[in-house]
Amino acid sequence: MKKTERAEALAFTLKVAREAGGVLQTYARELFSRPIRIIDKGASGLASEADLRAEEMVIAKIRRRYPHHGILAEEDSHGKGPARLQRDPKELTWLIDPLDGTNNFLNGLPFYCVSLALVEGHEVQVGVVHNPLTGETFYASRGGGAFLERKFGGKRLIKRLRAPQRSSPLRECLISTNLGSKRHNAHLIRRFPEVRAFRRLGSAALELSYVAGGILDAYWEYNLQPWDVAAGGLICQEAQLRISDLQGRAFDPFSLGVLAARAPLYDDLLEILQAKSFQPTKLTRVSTSLV
Image (cartoon, rainbow, N blue to C red):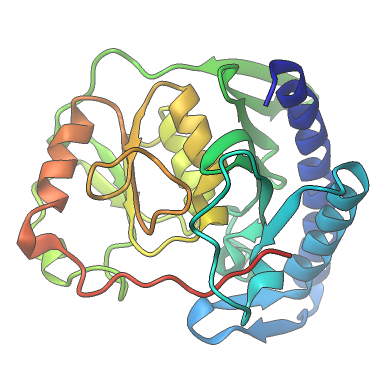
């Protein structure tokens, strides 16, 4: 994509992400006083009316603005065929997660977001992660840097995200991962080296963005979907963080896992996670398809 095309796509994505956030907030207000419809997706987790309506709105706007682009969306993909991992390097596809953190949303926890990304082949060109409840918006375009916009009272402040040159030692780090879930080897909890604390926020897109913003020191996860990591991954890249899959290969939103951290913490974590005793029993991808 040309620089001007990325700039136009980023402006469009920011607008749509905030509008989708408005849909989520409407349902959040309803959820405060009454239950909303929940869809059990089996191994893929839960979805709600909020997920579905936000996704429908995002897809409709993309199709009007970019009718020739592909769309890979979480809720629409459920139960369809496998994702196309061999991609044309010039193919433009939107990766959409209308509500990353559905369990948090349904339980009233303030860690959920809209995550939208535009991918050319396997390379993310534009990414936006918007938390409508806190008013945080992380965004990036390839070669254009990463930014955080946050509301303070009636004011909006924007700062550019840049990884610091130095990293704290592991024992002083605040790290996020899904310890205790079926995605991890049980030995990992007992045998991991000392850290300041572990956190699990329940939204891969936000966790990656928080690493880019210096709020978390590192994040890793197994068995993720492209829409989980595409936007946050680009934000990390543009903030000059180290980000890869769990084998240390270059970041690709279509990989099954992700590790993001500042250097040299990244190297320490990659060495730990590659140890045989820390490997998960199986990596699998939930089936997806283009809309």
